[in-house]
Amino acid sequence: MTSRTSGGVRRTPISYFVLILLTLFAGLPLLILVFNSFKSDLELGQNPLGLPSGLEFDNYTEAWTRGSIGRGMWNSVILVGGTVIGTCVFAGAAAYSMARLDLPFKRGMENYLFVVISLPVQMFIVPLFFLWSNLSLIDSLFGLIIIYVALNTPFSVLLLRTFLVGIPRELDEAARIDGANEWQIAWRVILPLARPGLLTVGLVAGLGAYSELLFAVIFVTTPEKLPMATALLQYSQGHTQLFGLVNAAAVIMTLPAVLLFLFMQRKFIAGLASGGVKG
Image 1 (tube, rainbow, N blue to C red):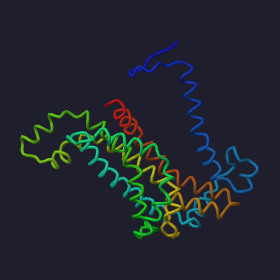
Image 2 (image 1 turned 60 degrees about the vertical axis):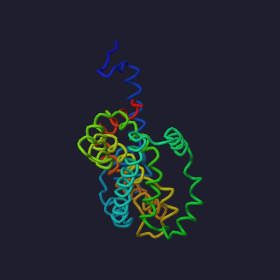
Image 3 (image 1 turned 90 degrees about the vertical axis):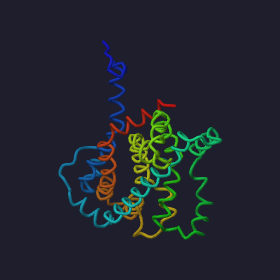
């Protein structure tokens, strides 16, 4: 017995089984992490996978105080905010140029962006470190924001370009007849219509900056400037025997990302789907 949704996806017992399996695979580790965050260290050692016998809320208060999580959270807010704004501005301008203007070598630029996306980021670390040292951008949140914007922009340009290509060119011509220049057409007419794409780009860049660890560990050394992910790593290394506190700190770090994704998941998936079907 099968049925078909409005989107044309066939519903079968096998599809339900696969979905349930994927849900368990994605959700169980998070659920166990939450359970363990409410256990004492003794109970966690005796029962690492089961329900807690009580709720140790002290784990959260102590983890927040010892790990300076509030400071790390504020640094992450600065990083995420700067990354999202920078990525949307630069990727929006580049995508508009590639989608709406008659530029030479556009196909070559697209191929170059595809190649950049496929390269491992580790190969940039050494030259970037020496360059950042000469520019005095080491141990600076602003320097880290520039890196995150550069890492997220190639994919964002390609994604936004697919939105902008699908917008009718008659809108450009109508705006030019009304006397608008290219800047006004881009920021007042075309880019507002690509709002779902900008929202998707902002969410991808923000979540990436929030959880990024490699560049943060290398380029930020002062404890007061550490973002949330790096602060959690440092905290877990210093409290290897206090499993309850480490789990509580991990839950505090994970919670904002999970809530943001759950709140915006429909727009995020719609944005990715729309960007994927347009050429």
